[in-house]
Length: 199
Image 1 (cartoon, helix red, strand yellow):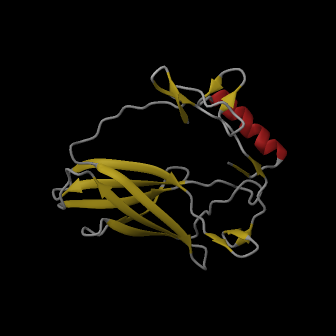
Image 2: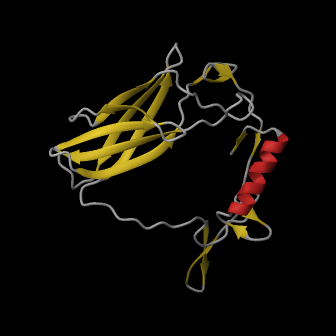
């Protein structure tokens, strides 16, 4: 943005240094939702892979500002078919826990594994001291390790060669924004051409 004097005031001029038009308005869907008075505000996940290819999921729970420390927090992991495979109780003081998944299905990018993009679901349950459920937070996640050297980027200890594109959410037909038809078309083209990444 550049300001310039105009008729005794300031006028803002938008200057473009990129190859798409930055339309006005709301570009993605808006969702309204309600929460209990005391609720799970956020869950932070970190995954790693052991030498025996087991998965380790570290989770930390952030509660709402209205919450007190008199709670029990449990993390439950479901596989792709929604089967409960393991669970763990979080530490009441740190609100964090660790879950081990034996023989984990690792997350792989397209073309690096016959079953790429495997996702688990973690369900965090917040309950009071009477075991009455207060809130539930669910999110999907993949188990993978990321490393890099001076010459390579490694996913699950295997080097990956990135083949991809810069992808924009705009179209000459419908403008900018979340467009599922255009999204499906673009992902099909990316898969068809053998790409494994986009920005």
